Length: 322
Ligand code: XMP
Image (cartoon, rainbow, N blue to C red; front, side, top):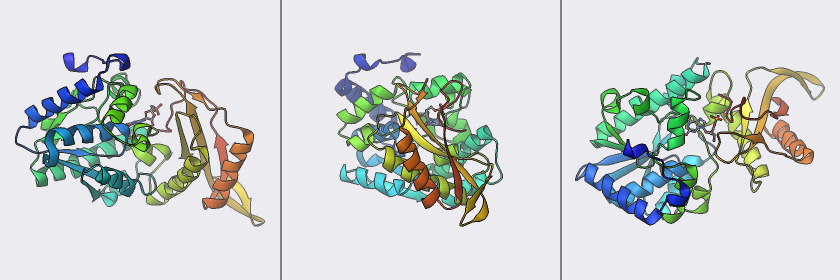
């Protein structure tokens, strides 16, 4: 299929690509409306800018607040796009996601529940309300590769799994970035005038902080991972790691606090060196830095008594926990 033929970074002419894709989007949507969900990741940000160029106000952009994003992320992203002239509506869907995730412990079921809630419940509702026929989406070639290979089901891949979005959810999906990998998307982001906090943004998974909780996802556990993530991002900012993250384990361990037994929680830190996320090595973080991270986490995140650093490579590890 010509649309899925890879465009390598050295072959990518950003101005030409932006022109061709904007025209394609205009032609498909015609006088109608399209909608898209912005997460602030580089892929959905680029799609938002492409769609905005092609359709202007006929693209409605939503930030779905699923309750599992990082601290203040919805507001920060909406404000970045506001300064670029793109209106982003934040949709509060926290309760719907937490309800859907209740009682689920299996990793793939968790991903599936987030996907279904996102596309079938929240998004389908927005499509109905807005009367949009098209959904613009930032699927890239790597998402398709990993899903088809059965490694991890990326939450935005359908067609390659034999799912017809029109039939399943009631709308058509336009995927302008399927020929690109992350490096190409970052180059486009820069060409589209997005700020560095977006074009160099650390990867963050679709299932968000839920990908970093082993076992059931609850608002309380999300709050713990979220607080640990703030610390990690503050302390490792500027490091050259590809990605760093905090994981909350399901098992508790005996600790002690104020001379008393405290059967507490465990946070695992991961930090990865990688070129394209297909293979990764743990970052060589100094012991002093690990110590600082650990001290801050056990002091600032209530209930955590153990902090570990993952030293296995991918494969056989994967970067996220689920
Ligand atoms: P894994 O855990 O598969 O992660 O080694 C590789 C890279 O992909 C990100 N990731 C995802 N990104 N939807 C996404 O958009 C997903 O479902 C998803 N799962 C993992 C992960 O953060 C890492 O950068």
